[in-house]
Image (cartoon, rainbow, N blue to C red):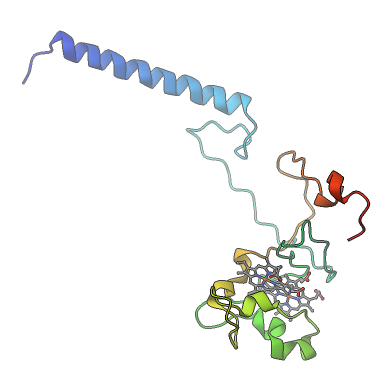
Length: 161
Ligand code: HEC
Ligand code: HEC
């Protein structure tokens, strides 16, 4: 075994010092910065809140916050399968289903491949609907946000659409 040289003692001291700094800064973070961990120290685990089955189910299409926004889903979806075998969303939203379902058809962009060619069925790029579309719950925002509709930008002030 090597005997300790002044060099290795110095390295050990540096390691101890950085460990202290890391511990001190994590205590600071936990107590002073608002995070989704809600003050739980980094070395502890939060109890996971229960998943509430309270997605809004009002069947009323919502305002989009900007023209290109994927519309939010105004109905419950937890029973709908989306995997390699089936896409239940398409049982109502596909072109040939909307007459029966009275659901809005997925838009033309969903039938386009990345080169802009139109396909007969939903493009693989748009297959997993919940990548972009989400249900809503009426909850308080987790953190404050200052989002304003683009309608309020000065250039849009006098426009109605
Ligand atoms: C049983 C039929 C049915 C199924 C299945 C269904 N939807 Fe719908 N969806 C509708 C209808 C009808 C509407 C129109 C609003 C309403 O009545 O809820 C709608 C509205 C929407 C809208 C809002 C469109 C807009 O312009 O605002 C989105 C987004 C949507 N659905 C996504 C989905 C996704 C994603 C799935 C699968 C997880 C799905 N839907 C499954 C019938 C269905
Ligand atoms: C990669 C993101 C993405 C995926 C995946 C996706 N969408 Fe969309 N969707 C959008 C965007 C963005 C819009 C609004 C712009 C547009 O029409 O392309 C939209 C629009 C819609 C609309 C409104 C159409 C209209 O004309 O009012 C419906 C309904 C819809 N999507 C359903 C679905 C369903 C069902 C799926 C799954 C089969 C799906 N979307 C997958 C992004 C996506």
